[in-house]
Every structure is written in structure tokens, then in C-alpha cells.
Amino acid sequence: MARTEYDKEHAHPGVGQYVEIGVILAAMTLLEVILYESFDRGLMTAVGIPALIVLTILKFMLVVLWFMHLRFDHKLFRRLFFAGVALAVVVFGIVGANFYLGPQTGF
Image (cartoon, rainbow, N blue to C red):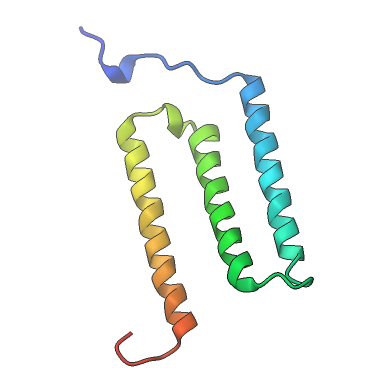
């Protein structure tokens, strides 16, 4: 029986790479905390909240790609994952715009 692409072994990262990703996630979390705490010190929420949303999405994708091994799975699974993330961003954007703009005609 011929081996297919699905049967091939993939080289998974070592402990050092997982520690590196953990440090990156910790730094991103620290940045999120600093951003959140800076709201009281005059940071505009129009800048801070989108930055927090972007950081959250990046952290989510980093965790899924590395710690859930999606990075090493078939490309179709990655594409489906990114399509789902894109769809979620669009839906949350529409709902957020609806709350931000308020009840207006035609929206």
C-alpha cells in the first residue's frame, strides 16, 4: 500500500519552541493588561479596544496552531480554521457596528 501525505510523520517542535511560544503568549498577555490599565490613564477606547481584540485573536490563533497542533495537520484543516476565524470576525464586526451605530433606518 502506498503511503499518502496523511501517513507521513511531521517533525513536532521541541520543548524549547513550546517555551518560546509560552513566553510570547505571556508577553502578549502583559501587553493586554498594560493596554487595559491605560484606559484609566487617558488611552482612548477607540484605539485600545480594537488593539485588545486583535491581540486576543492573535493569541487564540497562536494557541490553536501550536498547542493544538493544527500547524502540523493537513492544510484543509488550517484553511477551515482560518475561514471560521474570518467569519467570526465579520459577524462580531457587524454586531459591534450595530451596537455602535444604534438603531438607524436600514441597518
